Amino acid sequence: MLQHRALPTRLEGMVGLGRPRLVELARMRGPLLQVALDFTDAADALRTLAAVKHSLGEEVFVAEAGTPLVKAAGVGVARLLSAVAAPSPVLVDMKTADTGGLEARMAAEAGADATTVLGLSPDETIESAASEARRQGIALVADLLGVKDPVKRAEELAALGVDIVEVHVGIDAQRALGMTAAELRGLVRRVAEVFPGPVSVAGGLNARTAPAMVEAGASIVVVGGAITRSPDPGAAAKAILEAIRGKS
Image (tube, rainbow, N blue to C red; front, side):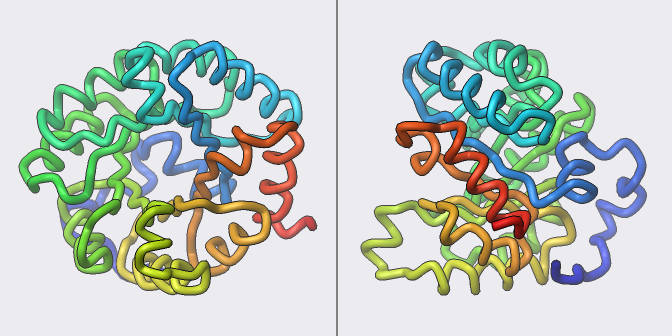
């Protein structure tokens, strides 16, 4: 794992003192597998999550209520996921772009351990979300999807109080830009060098490509389709977890 630089002033005093659970897990028990449940039917999400939970047994992972699931079923779906995933944490991928404090509070009240804000949102929105997340004791993750200069923005997000940044290059963008897994790994490395907290990474990852992201400095690996579209989601999740833990 890469060494991070000193924490920005606004984060000093927070480390080791009431840090959100997901941050602690990423630091102490990482790398973590985050399973993105990008369904539109809660029943489908719960069935897949149950299969993953059964296969992983006592292993801690992150159950993500994907944005489509949140929009279709409501943020309250976090409670349903938590009932299956516990004691593993639940993240709701709100991709907040405005009303940061309100949506962070909604996520917390729904029982989520973490929520997301778009990294390209106004600073005021991110500060509001970070402040409310801190009050609620949940982690705030900033998704760098669409950010033109992810490395510079990661530095700014640290100063705004964000707990975790997610390097996220969508499949469409990867294809349009001709971006390879190696180039995504390079971006993860550069972000991890400047951001003091855990770094997560998403973007069409699987058991073959995910380990390189951990080597580059990612503490959380987000996987969706390689698990949820597999004929055996539990086995797929286990294979990916073993791969990022260096057991395969």
